[in-house]
Every structure is written in structure tokens, then in C-alpha cells.
Image (cartoon, rainbow, N blue to C red; front, top):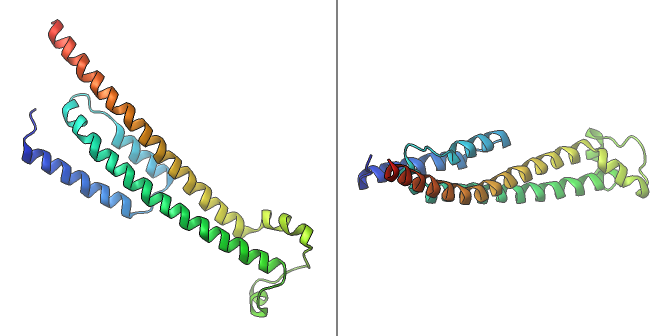
Length: 168
């Protein structure tokens, strides 16, 4: 199938629309991995089209990476704020109204503060969110590396098809 300029433009626009929709949503790690797998899968029946898609896939992965890196940075700031608030909570430096809703059951020694912080629910919850976002960013970085291999695989498949065609 020969791609006309108009058909190529339609394909590019549909890829851009799908890309924009994917980026605007917060995706779980599983959703990101599934999306990456679908995006990087090569249709060996349409190698020419797959070759053209390389640039758009890179752009999509770059946008995903940028957006998720920004989200990671934001979560890390929130994590630091939660840690500071919990340190202030355990050292008794919060306003009296705070302790009415979240009482301090016992006085915490400075030497024990680290132990309390390691088991604090709010700190653990934020750490979980940051860790998950770090996994997402790493998965996208690995997908960008895989994209380079994808280009070589497409090139090799095209050369193989030429060799088969010339050989028969």
C-alpha cells in the first residue's frame, strides 16, 4: 500500500490526538506499560508506515516522560512537605487545634523521631506515590531506549524482505 501525502497527514493527526488524550490523563504504571507495548509493537505487514511512525512515537514518549517527570518532581515536593509536617507533629510544634484531630499519644524523643517517621502512615503513603511515579518515569525512559532498537528492527525487516523478494 502506497501512502499518499493526505493519508499520511490523517495518520499523523490521529496519532497526535491519541497522544494528547493519553498525556492529559494520569495513568497507572500498568496502563503506561500497556500503552508503551501497543505503541512500540511493529506491524510487519506495514513496515513503511511503521518507519514513519518512529518520529511520532518518539514525540509521544518524550511528552509522556516530560509530563511524568514533572509529576514526580511535584510529588517529591509534597513528600518533603508531609515529612516536615509530621516532624513538627511529633516534636510538638503544631498548633493546639491540630492535636485535637490528630493527638500525639506520647512524647517522642528526638532519638526516636526517625523510627516514628519510618512507620508514619502519611509519610509511607507519600513515599508509595513517589516510588510508583519513579517506576513510571523509569519505564518511559526504558521505552525510549527500546525505540532506538525498534528503528533498527524495522530497517532489518525491510532489508530482509528485499532479500527474500530478490532471492525468489
